[in-house]
Length: 332
Image (tube, rainbow, N blue to C red; front, side, top):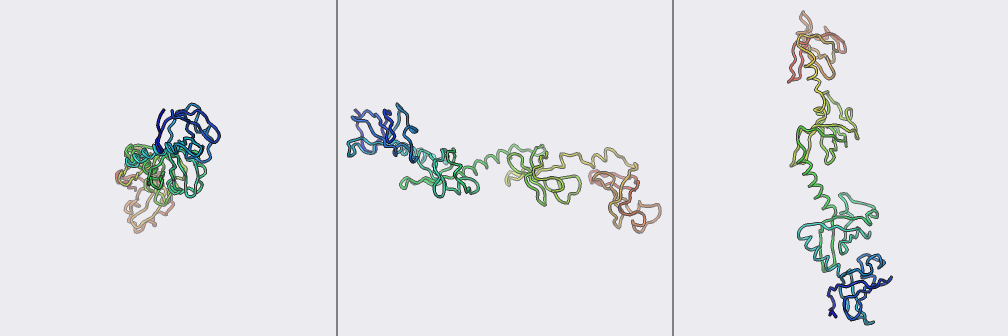
């Protein structure tokens, strides 16, 4: 026969399960009684849902002999003692705990981590959650931010774990992102200076100057939220966690196309788009404008361009120079 003392953790086998209590054979002179309230940290539990007949389990001795002469044990206190040791080590190593949400209380949630861990509502997600009821029954992972055994106080933060995890994921994502490669993404927002694209892990910015080879007054004229597009990675700033993207880099450069299709001395048809004191600009292709210098407007001397042409006029012009690198075409 084993000897027991108050506060001792003993091991035994379940020999009876009633609606109010469980009997445990620990090899003592009498079977130990575990009241239903001492089975679990959860409230109002059915003993048959917590233990099975013949199951081996640990229990803490509450009293060797109560007023009825019974050996009274507690499963949840034994679990509590074991859990405290594990939780203290986890806190010291800056680890995480995982457990199901068992209750919604004022100001937060109770998570079963071997004992009752309190998860404040403000620390459940990255942003505050108003309705906590859907979390009941869910397994959550969290960091331990406060521990006080004397006050039986364990405060958890899932937000800290999410921030840490997302930081690691962002770093890994950025490490695998290389300038020059093409990625598919979805436009997540459009602003005056460009468009943000969700690449499936982080958002990158397509500056307005990188949306099109043509002049863009507003990004909304090129893309809209929800559009699926292919972009090229221009730059990855690891320290600032910023990604620069280009949409136009995935498209054929119209200047390159024009230069490949035309040569100096060739005649092309175009439309006068703008007159300036030194000449006139003529659109000779989609997004391609060339300059007819005032000296090339007529065989005779011209004082003002509008003496020869008007804005909107369509006419034939001759290519006299193509400066592809400078994106300039001289016409006559």
